[in-house]
Amino acid sequence: MTEHTIPQSGHAVPTVFTQAQLDWLPWLEPFPEAALTERHWAGLVDASRAKSPYFMLLVRDPDILQARTKTDKDIFYNPEAGLPRAERELAAAAASRLNGCIYCASVHARFATHFSKRGDDVQRLLDDGLTADLGPRWNAITSASAALSATPSSFGAAHVAALRAQGLDDAAIVDVINGAAFFNWANRLMLSLGEPELPTT
Image 1 (cartoon, one colour):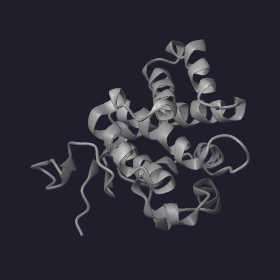
Image 2: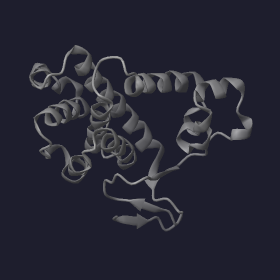
Image 3: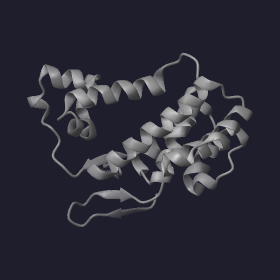
């Protein structure tokens, strides 16, 4: 994997998109775990997130973090109708690839591979970007996700028609929109607060 080392920190930062597990280095001091109150723990939703420097930055505003996390979980984990999980993850990976968020792209590409068993196609998205030919259905999903990520007003009737032509109903189309839109926002937040790094172990 291509990487560079930041001289002042010694951290190895990946410079290409990957499905490998990455760490994330915050540029600000995370909230100290010992100082978490009941309100902070409620904001984290999952106690295990106290081990994440990203969530320990966001927990400084626990009410907003709680709303953010519950929205995230509903978009990606709600099994009622809509898109299969693999394609929700694909929408997030496509948005992250367009926005240049190596960390988020790695997470959601890995999930897309896990749930779809189409690792070569997912890697093609990472390697070639949004021009990659992933087949008609996935092309429609990544095209819609890219349009929403580039500028929401560029998403329109043609994208909806392309998704419908591939068999997506209203609930599935909403899942594409939600997955891409959520990570279009999340990418910008993560890119402004830190950077990915290669694990040290």
